Image 1 (cartoon, rainbow, N blue to C red):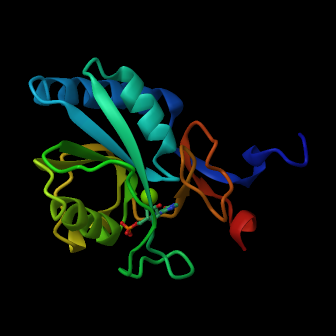
Image 2 (spheres, protein in one colour; image 1 turned 60 degrees about the vertical axis):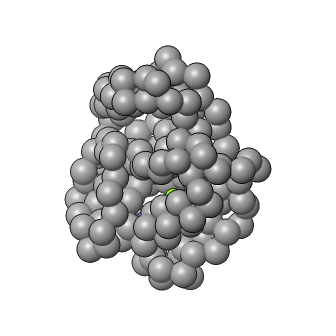
Length: 183
Ligand code: IMP
Ligand code: MG
């Protein structure tokens, strides 16, 4: 095996590429039907949501527009601080628009509840959330996630957009890291 191969850094695959693909198909069908008579603006949260945004949007039949935001919620380490900073704002005015926030994972829910309040305060007609993954911790903060891909255990996961120190985002599945990869 190549010394740079990531396979050796992984402990376990939690959600396979096939499972992601099939679930996204279901979510896209639900979104198409829910927004049949309303034009949707997809807002991807950089960088983690890049994969979900790319794959989900390609399964939609509806006419949509896409925009991106980058926010930072982690002060340091792997715990959410609740302090959210906008690193890159939307390019578009969302007043009167139907917005669907596309997220990689809802962990504490702090980032998302802040984002929901922020986008609603800009006068959007509606703001909903689609998240590929949700952890049990998300129940701590009242945040209504309309479309959820998979509920996963409270482990730190990588792949399909999710990183550890900016690595592993390119994996086509979601998995946990072997101890030697983060210690
Ligand atoms: P929250 O505010 O705790 O819900 O999570 C905020 C952000 O932390 C998520 O959008 C992810 O970018 C990141 N995050 C949360 N859990 C994980 C994980 O298990 N692996 C990688 N990033 C994570
Ligand atoms: Mg994120």
